[in-house]
Length: 143
Ligand code: FES
Image 1: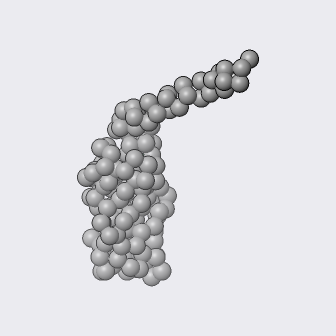
Image 2: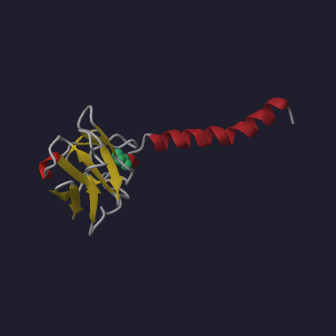
Image 3: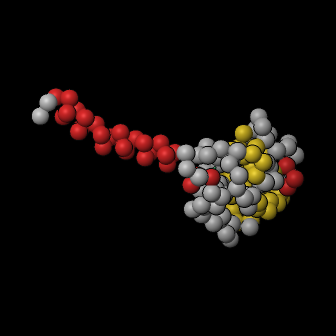
């Protein structure tokens, strides 16, 4: 077998595989809302000590599958929001960005506002929003 023939036989399957992968990358499969998204956590009930956690505006933490964010200075329920951590598209963990006041999914770029609504990027359904209550320096998240 000639060297050229050998190389052609060796690289042909790789070329086919690459074309297949490129096609998958452009497919609509990643654009299907709620494809493989896990259900948001149910029966959530936990507390956060506001003396030591979420002390600054824009700070956030993840706990029990929920992301909790401080949006304002006062220790009142209206200063906080709690939403499901898993993206409603395919379940990747979202992150809060204080600079834009949005939750963004790093996987396909879904963007959610602090009400949980999808406002950009990957089109998908809204995040579940959990109830928050504040008593003194204790924040309770339920839902
Ligand atoms: S998993 Fe696709 S946008 Fe979040």
